[in-house]
Every structure is written in C-alpha cells, then in structure tokens.
View (tube, each protein chain N blue to C red):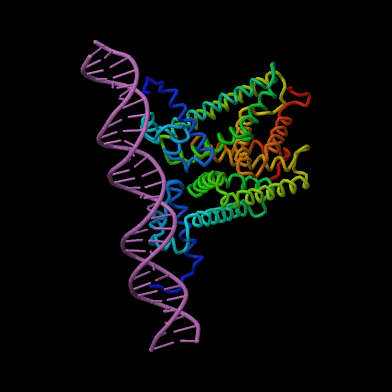
Length: 204
Length: 204
DNA sequence: GTCTTCATGATACGACCGTACCACAACCGT
DNA sequence: ACGGTTGTGGTACGGTCGTATCATGAAGAC
C-alpha cells in the first residue's frame, strides 16, 4: 500500500476531518483519535503528518480561514455581474454571518481559536490580526470607491463605518450562533446602516 | 475545625477562585485541582460544595455575570450625578469593553462559555439569552428617553441602534481581547456613532 | 453524654489523552 | 538486486482528570 503520497493533500484531508468533528462536538472535545477516526486513518498517521496536536490545530485554523475566505470571495463575485458597491458590501457582510452549517462551523471554531489565542502565543501569532485587517481594508476600499462615485451621504467616515460594520458582523454572528438572534434580523440591521450610509437614490 | 459553615459563601469563594484561575490560564485548562489550590482548599471540598464540575462551571458563569452586571451598573451610576442619556449610554458601552484585568477576564470567560454553550444545552439555557436581552432593553429605554426629550436626530431607529451598538461592543471587545485593537479606538467608534445619533446641540 | 450529622482530609480508580516506540511492507535510487 | 527511505499499523507509557471511597474529627440535638 505505501506508495508515495502527497503530503499537502493528506494534511488537508486530515485538517478537514478536524474541522468536521470540531464543528460537531466542539474544539475542546476533539482528540487526535477523533480526528483519525473521522479522516478514516489510524492515529499513527495523524501523528505522522502532524508531529504534534498543536501543529494540527494550527494547520486546521489556517485551512479554516483560507476556505472561508474563498467562500466569502465567491459570494461577493456571485453578487451580480456588475455589482454596485452596496451590493458587494452587503454580500461581504451577510456572507460572514453564521447562516448555514459551514458558516456556523466557521464562526464557532474561529471564536474557539480566538479564545485559545488569549493565552497561547503560537495561536496569537496566527491570522487573528492579519485576516480581519484584510477584511477591513477591503471594506474601506469599497466604501471609498462608493464615496468617490458620490454614492454616500455627506459626513460619512469610511474607516469608522468599515470598522463598525465588521464589529457588528462579529457581534451579531455570535448572537446568531448561540441562538439569541436570527440571521434575518441581522440582515435587517445591515440594511438599516447601509440605508443610512448610502444616498437615498441608492448605490445599487 | 469543622464548625457550621455558610454554604453560599463558600461556593462563592470557590467560584471566584475558578474565575481567577480561568482568567489566568484559560477556561479549557482549568481542573478541579487548580480551583481547589487557588481557593486554598482541598480537592474534596470543591467536590463537596459542587457535586460535579459541570455544576461548578454553571455556578461560576452565573457568578461572573452577576458581578459584571453590578460593575457596569456602578459605572453608569458613577457617570455623573445627573447624567444625560448620552453619558449613560457611553458609560454602558465603554464599561463593557475589556480595558482592565477584570473586564478582560469577563470578556474572555464569557466568550469561552458562549463557545461551550454551542454544544452544551445546560450552558445554552444559561443567561446568554436573558442577559444580553436585558442590556438591549436598557439601551433601548435610554435611547427612547433621549428621543422623547428631543435629543436625537430625525429618523433614528432606537431598537436598531441599540442592537447595533451592543453588537459592536461585543465585536470590538473581542478585537481588543486578541490585541487587534486598543480600547481608545473602540471608544472613538462609539463617539462617532453617538455623534451621529444625537443632535448636534448635544445630549450632554 | 451519647449519637447523629456535618465538614474535611487523603487517596484510590478508571478512563482518556498526547506522545513514543517498535515492527514491517512497499517503493525508489543506484 | 538491494539497501535505505517512506508510509503505515499496533500498541504501550506516563500523566492528568473527574469522580468515588474510606476515614475521622468536631459540633449540635435530644
């Protein structure tokens, strides 16, 4: 059986098994044996491709964020052939909400990692900083673009609005996750603010 | 030594030990033995006052939220003898930010509990719903009050603004917690929105 | 003054977890 | 052809964790 194997691919499969089982039972409840069983390989192999559990977790986090970033990008592209800035912003914000299983899992695990990162400097060095900064930059870019096109009301601070909308997205996402709020009401909140930011004649 | 002892008081002491050690090392890394050592009692006693670890965690969460609720209330009362609605709202929002050790611990542990609650129905039944709803109601009340006093700009939706501000508070809090943002910039965001919500002549 | 109940200590148990070790089969380079 | 590297399985080890058990001293009840 042992033919040469693509390590990167195997690591990805195992990382996806980690994400699946962690999404089902919670990251705190996941052991190497669970990941091995979910991936359909032996415990030894998980050890083989990831020397230690910490490395597995790190790789899992990176994989999770990459996959979700791609998903959000795809959603934005799917927002229309020639989407206006407002539609793109709305797509960006709602794509980040935990609506279906995949986005729920992402929110759940990303938050789990964030909590761990508070006391684990290896995790703290991971994309908790870089990744949201990229989202913020993208959102600021979209708002600036809309502003220069004259679509925004007077007095709008694009940076402050971008930060606010992303913080709201995170906060509302957690509320949805724990069942306090539903996705529709969160979307309504976004609409409220985009109505406020964009001119009445619409950015669509 | 064994004189009669106040169970409630003892449970509170142990719960505070739990909060302290969980704040230092993370909730996931806390065992009964750690709590016992932190509280200066034997492992057996922790078992005695809390039959099981789950009960300890539940009680710890309740204690944490109660204490923090009192803290926020105190901050609001301290916002001035006869504070305007805007000052009270600002106090409410900034008091919830993780600025010092206690508020950082609160944010950290509350988030930890929220993550656990995703798959633990005993935790899901805890104040994750009730507590933020109370905060939302309070904030809506303050905004309505300001609106009726003519302090708000036209077109402000008090419910939507309350939900947004609280979601922002949660989102910004997490950003601060993981070191992505500092408390001052978060306060600036609140100022930006309160400037927008309140009339130019000020609600102060 | 006994006797029950409360509070506390020490320690043992069983399970699980991450990691390490050992063995071996299959492939590749030479 | 063959020796060394690579991939894989099985399993054992040491530690920790939550919980259970046993024992016992001190305090209140009657």
